[in-house]
Image 1 (cartoon, rainbow, N blue to C red):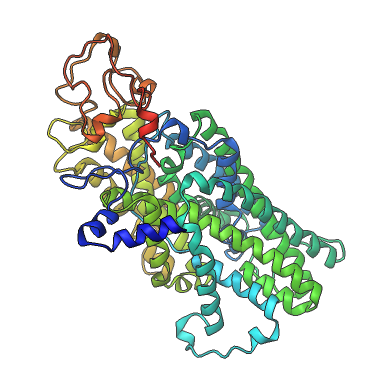
Image 2: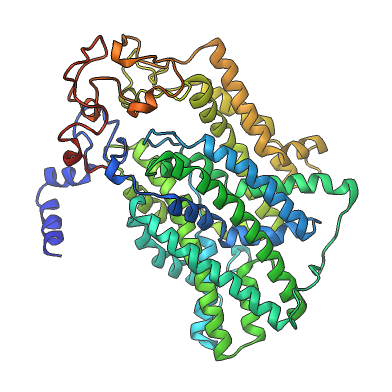
Length: 559
């Protein structure tokens, strides 16, 4: 506490000290800034994520109010509950394949694309249920001073900011610490969801119900084809942003194997379980309440009203608290962490991952997310639109790593735009990737209009949008591959001449063995302390590569 006060006093003691305090740790104070402590390769002692953490991470992203709502929402477009299960299984298999392909093998590096999401509204609505359970009628007596056009009431807006205040301290946690939150959340939220389901079955006379919902229109035969495709696309779209920021967490893996099967298992299990739990809970509570609720906060609020008592208030509070924790963990893992990683890449001199996470939290209320979650159709359109803009970039990343570079990344070159380096491109812009992204987006984006306003575009356009995940992915990937055949991407620095100890540099994932460093190179090269050069090097008595040099571990408090 004393040292913190001393640092604050020093920061404001002079203009120079204030400017120094703004600098991100390990970022250069002058000249070009392409790195800071969060952008440098992750040192071995910081690679602490195990299979348990990756499994919990994906369980965390799915066992949340967003995925819970999706299960029952699919019913609203004419599908049966088991159709949702099939859609979840198919979508999860495809997602698992993309996740593994987008996990950098043995390269402890972040790769990123700027984006911002706001799920804080979910947390606010669940928090409103918690506050009602705690304060009872006092909460109900809060008058509403907002018009209906606002899309939210005064007390729900208050709950939104209460949730925001509770969530805000989590934004100061680095990913190396966040992993523990994911494990706690995975256990607590799973117990809470099954607890509500068990109570609902008991209250419904021991029956899970017939999976029939009020105002449900059941489709059959050929009419099911495109709603099923839309369901699969929505299932995949719910985790789409995580596919792009996958390397931001995979870089912390203790080993590559820890970040593959555990993630695939977590995706498949969690999607199937939450899809069943949401539909089953809604089915059982429909028999109790006589009405189907697709929003988890509406359901909990209705149960609280129907069974108002001290026991019901306590039970709903702890159940809703599980969803609050779920939303906090989801925001931290799939929203704030990517923004923090992107921010550090965009402004490496001043932004670290934690600073970017805090900035994301400060911007969240400005996104008015309650406007997005206004109806089931809007919610599905919101999820689907993610795929249109993100999957072309994901396709580019997969093709670039696996097909073109064959798993070979020269790490020191990632931190410079000097002419002749493989990632300098044209002023730092990879125009092949830009063109591929535009092609992928343009191929399906026109269908958004049809989803928002039926009849605005022809049926073919609407159907292409329902296939947006796969179409945009393959269009982006295919365009990038073709352009790279015509205009090949460089793999290594133009002036590099391989030494005998470098071996076959054209082999698949050759550079992964040394974590992206040639003989004679280590992290000091990135910091500007040249060890060796890009030319011919002698193999004898060279410093170890990457983070293995004698004093590197002590010097690199990275991440």
